[in-house]
Length: 259
Length: 267
Image (tube, rainbow over all chains, first blue to last red; front, side, top):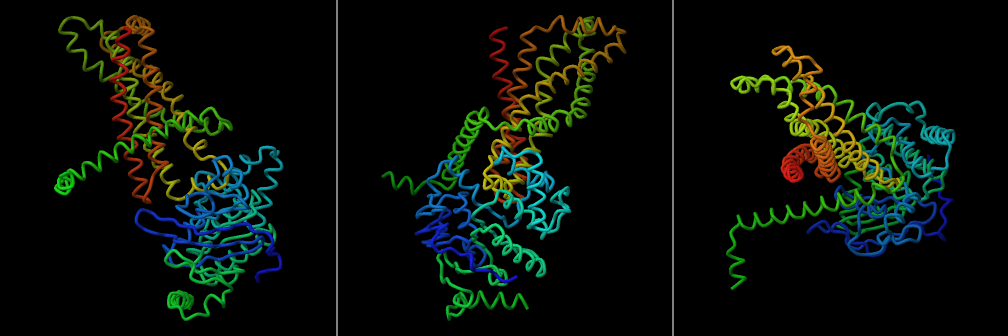
């Protein structure tokens, strides 16, 4: 599925990051990150393992606090929000975890019901059921509704993870390695699902990955993270059309692996 | 002079200083955790359904092991006490002796230790596993309160269920003791129970319930604290389960000592 870029609205800034710094002890993970994400845009953050990609989106979701810099989500400075305000803004942020993070003591239905009934208490039982069935249909897994997470494949878990965040109808989606650990066919299915979700729900997304096929098919803009900084950003061709060894080697290794 | 002394500090003293510091940091973290519990326990939304599910998990699913432990404790304790009492021809004191021992000490203590091993470790492992697989983070980013759903429900359920299990332990323990006494002395059930409860005061029952409430709270807080703050993957999960039990047991014995001193003051 090809990305439809006509929905990007450059006049609406959904995420704005300036001079973001984050360290863990003596390890500097992010050392001055600037990033803007516009309404309807899919931004792919590429980088090697341990380059700080996941830390970046965890800061955006308010799971980690930045050491320095500004992170504005939907116009609000995320690190200055109190718990109540953070919960309010998180309603508009969906987070797809690397390992899916499905609640393994609950069925698929309960996994989807959990955030819905706690955030939209006004819904009737019938409306809850309809919303769950609708979102499962959107990810093509209605038949798994009564299954436990342990009974699902890796690809199915990713899809249910995406369904669980979609049920709250977020405006921004943060994907952490959506195709990590999946076979090539399932990777393509997940890439198509990301594009379908973006069109159907009109969301803006940050997609963390080191998979170039995912980056190419889902990203409107790519940014390359290395040594705590963005090395390059632009379209797929703009990012990789360079002599920078760090970028070239990343591309070459991905190319070799994909063969 | 001070800097020379600092430089001369042995590696051992540096390590022990770090350990002391880590210990006090740990105590402070527990304090914050308990404080958060009391701040949020009365704040809606209330997860009644989950509390009931946890009561079922903690209470009903522990009945078999508590029954077995209580019955054997009552029976063996009676059997072991008989020779000493029979030397003085005082086997008729057995019901009083057993009821005092079971209700005042054995029931709360043994139930708490068994539940710490069975449920406390389970809480540490379950929450630890949820932490390292990012399930707790997933709850947070979906605008729900994982502390309310995972910690408050477990602590409330455990604090409710342990006194009930202790009462059950006492009943089964006395039943086990009665069977042994009946077998040897042909005492009737009514007579055994009359003798047993004649030596038990309201203060004993109150102390037993108070102790078990405190133990229940302690076990759940230790299990949830260790699990909720687990780190370092599967190793961290194992450590959380293990330390949840060790810390609970350690605290239970200290609390036993303190509560007994306080109760004796009123006796």
